[in-house]
Image (cartoon, rainbow, N blue to C red):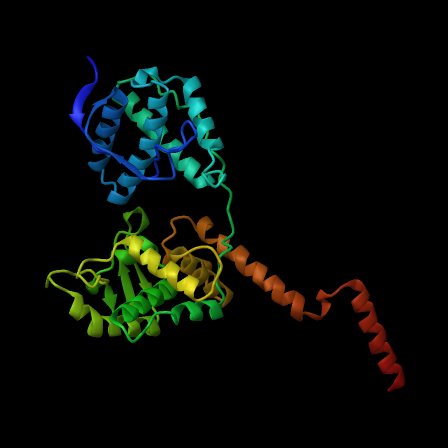
Length: 363
């Protein structure tokens, strides 16, 4: 490597801010820098690494995430004058780990453990690639440990009454209202992920067998899931009364379209669900994933087998699905304490016994 290469390069760091007062507080706002700039070796290697990953079958979604996390690392290293991979030491790797673990947002909140793990894994994998390619002798991140991730119980599970309030928000007198109702119904009926619903095509809906084919879900795995008659009815209404008027190109197979005929993007669908929740007066945090939590929990409470829920949600690990058993047990405990005769205190039990005895004496 003789020196930096002068190129045209657009640095788009969704979550970066040049206005942040912290040394490396470049995570929350978006800024785009364009023009002729100098690229150091680390930046060149990152681009090479991303190109390599694109040939390994990674999804576009995964590649975007990798690029985002490595951009954060690149900004951090540039601030410290580190432009070459071999300049990164184990001591500096520990400092970067500390930055990730201690970083606070503009709301003074620590990053979630999951985000911390993603940030560190991205850099560890990058340096393992450099070691494999013999750009460096040994990765300085080998001994860096990942934060421990606990199982967090979903706190944003909706009641059936809250769900119905949200579903009733769209104005059914308008095409957009019918489309939005179909979107909400599908989220509630299937528990699909946001990107899975966004990728649905018209051919994926089987009205006769009441099921949906999910193409390349998480981990690029396909699966078939059941769907309720009510959700299918609203989907059919949307297809017959709305989508036919939106579609501009015959070969456009995307299920949900904008009024311009373009496939709906994930951020628009996210806003659709969030606005419906707010207009319904539901204050619980969450949006599309809230329906996913709700679907799993309500099915479990009503007797569904945990492995069937795992299959429906597309979880690779049963342990991921089992978090919903804790939510269901918590609900069961509440019902138990309200309804079981022996669930009261010892004093109450004794009083009830005395009353029963007195009743027996007088009878």
